[in-house]
Length: 327
Image 1 (cartoon, helix red, strand yellow):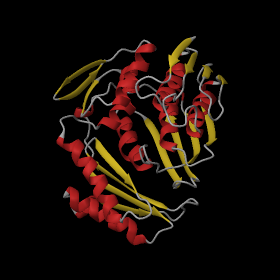
Image 2 (cartoon, helix red, strand yellow; image 1 turned 30 degrees about the vertical axis):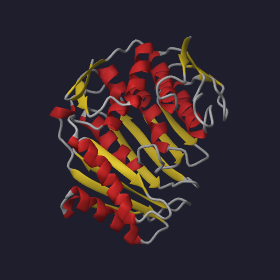
Image 3 (cartoon, rainbow, N blue to C red; image 1 turned 90 degrees about the horizontal axis):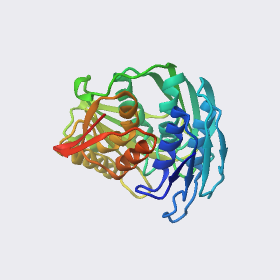
Image 4 (cartoon, rainbow, N blue to C red; image 1 turned 180 degrees about the horizontal axis):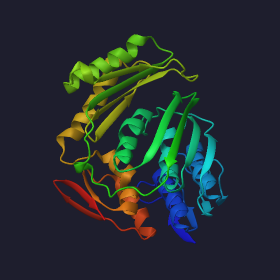
């Protein structure tokens, strides 16, 4: 039984998601202690429980401690098998972060995940970032998967729903994004239960601040939104992306400006992929090999490398112009 201290480094959900995914992949039972011990409200939240359950269902794991506020989880995996899984977070907890835990295992065996919760949540990738950057990255390296955003879910109501299908399982190619088809410049602006001009103003503001041409703008106003009211804008340039979430009192133009500013910060730094995509794909680098350069060795990336090493996956990290990750 591998014991992991859940309060080190990032000290939050990143450790949980990475640990249970690797446990399922390697067949290694794991205990995670002191979960989120340094947070204002320590212990498991609903989205962490949903992530563990999603992985548990694909490998028939036995689990202990899956209750709100629990500071300890025991995860004993069985053999991963193709499965069609339905998970309801029960709150506006992040759907993208639950997908992040489930997907590395699902790529090995196939299956579907239909999940309800929040599609646009603070301190989490937006669902557009996942669909148009993260999943595009994996597809470029051989993943056969598809995502459908059934409806959007905003804080605090949640109620969004997303379906992900791994159609044909198999190994990815070694990661080398510098040699793949580089994505273009895109803007995805969304709103729910708001006038159409909100998404349009967000997108136009982001476009102006980034200097994109009009052809790069994709505006989508959901015709089947969830129960909540909200908006988001996600901006992409090559293998770098960023986003911003709308909130009451924050003008739509400011939302677009914030997203653009975050992306411009990433573009100015050397590196092929942004620091957030880096921490999300390190587990695939460890599994399938390759090399890529990211803009920063973030705390989340340090945490993933730490957990990978506990399972015997050691990556090389070299900081020069950007951060080079390789196996």
